[in-house]
Structures are given as C-alpha cells and as structure tokens.
Length: 274
View 1 (cartoon, rainbow, N blue to C red):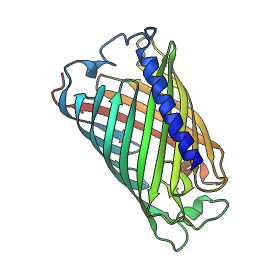
View 2: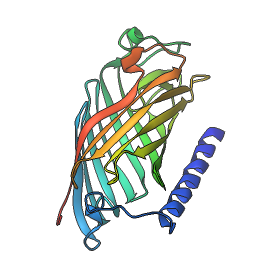
View 3: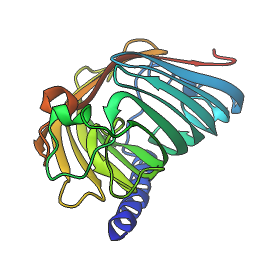
View 4: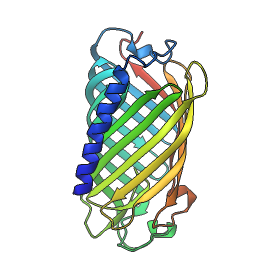
C-alpha cells in the first residue's frame, strides 16, 4: 500500500511539473501547423478518435468538449487487438498539449495464455501449459502521461496503476498490457525517457526509454531499457515505435514475450475538423 501511495504522489508531482513547464515563457512554440493543427478552432462539443494499425489494431473514440487532441475532457472507449489478446476499455480522459490523465475500466481476454500457479521463475512454455483456464480478467486503471519540454527535445514520463479484478491472490497472470508476469491486486508501470528532436521542424524524435514494472508478486520487479521513435508525418498521421528489453527480471520469457513495445501508424480525426 505504501508503494501505491508513493506512486500516486509521484503522479501528482509529475503533473505539476509538466503544467509548469508548459506555461514557462522560455518554452518555444512549435514552428508550423502540422504539430499544432488541432489547436485551431473554438472549444466545442465533438466526436473524435484515433486509429492505430501495426503490430496491434487499436481504435479510440472520444465524446468530449474542448479542442480534440489538444485540450479537452470527455468519455472514451477503446478496443485493442494483438496477436495474443483482445481488450476493451471505457472511462474518462483529460487531454492537454503537455499530457493526458485517464481513468478507465478494462477487460482483457488472452487467446492462449493461462493463469499461472505461483512459482519463483516463469519460463516461456509456462504461459500456455497447465490446467488452469485461459486468462480473462478485468482491471481498474489510472494513468498519467506527461511531456516536459526542453530545448533539444522533451522528457517523456508515464505512470499507471492498475487494480486487477476477479484474479485470485494466489494466482499469477501474464498481464497482456504490461507484458510481464504479475500477482494482483496491484500492478504498476513507470516509464521515463528523453526524446531528442532530430529535425528543426521537430517532426522526428528519437531517444532512450526505461520501464519499471511492479506488482504484489514478491521480489519480482522488472526493469526494461530500450529506444523510442516518433514521427509526425502529417497533421493527422503519425508513426510510433518503441522497444524495451529486460535487464532485470525473475522470469525467462524470451525476447518477444518479455519485451515491451509497439510499432504502428496512428491516424487522428475529429468532427468539424478544419
């Protein structure tokens, strides 16, 4: 419980730092309309969304008020399909140029991965072996993502805390969201990175990314390191990619199942778009 409280405190601190950094007079505005397209127009009721296609297929639809994809608040629904699982989520989100705050409920259904009996170290074959049922579980999630500007790039911070639902305390599960073996009810992930601007227009960014994953599984924290890249191709289309591999983990899941990452094209749209 102390860890949960510490994470909540860090969330509040990061949100405060991000807001202060965004309002600083030393922060230079983006040089063109590609990155600030959705800033234009008056605040309004809207329907908006994002579609990601790549290693996963993910769609988000939002019903809200404000400037969509810029400064807004509203209800969101999310569907996500990967080669190993399907998930649906719904909740509320506050979006701003310097970050996002999300509160939502999620349902995850693995295709082949099973619930696991508690063991000290899990190997890849354990994920589909045994007599326990295929993993189906719910979670309540609170997450914060912040972008803290710097002259040559920006600091990326993401923190989320989940409470697993309908998962026995004496059962492990390969969490398809964090891609790690966890024990509930509390699961958390912290990401920290720095993305450098590769071009003067700031459309391309590249930099290191670290992840810390924890749960109520004793002495089983996971630390991953890797690299992230993003490119704003047009005012509506972006390329997102990152990969992290564990440098500390109690398990041996192989390079694929132990890694965090994504590779996708993201298309953003909104009603009454300019």
